[in-house]
Amino acid sequence: MYIAIGAPFGAMLRYYISQKMNGNFPYGTLFINLLGALLLGIVARFDMTTMLLLGTGFLGAFTTFSTLNVEIVKLYETNKNWCIFYITITYIFGPLLYLFAYTFHL
Image (cartoon, rainbow, N blue to C red; front, side, top):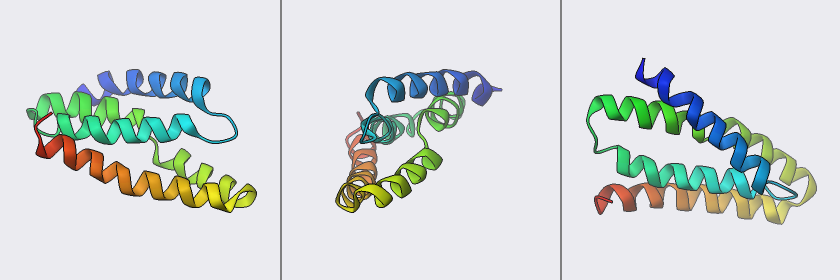
């Protein structure tokens, strides 16, 4: 139930940010996924109810793995350098932001 409460808000915020920030390069999706990783590092220390509401529900719907991969393929077809940049930033800084937030108890 907690997941169902948090998910719509995460999805709506993701849609809004994507509409405002995405253009030729998926800045919105990059921002969303990096912010989501940081926030998950914070939420991971909360109790199970809060984790279900915010971690699995809100952040699960806020972040997006499927859109990320669609955008990677599109960038690969149009600009391989931007594609490599996007993959590198996402997969290096995402886990680092999570670890930073989790380790330093943000």
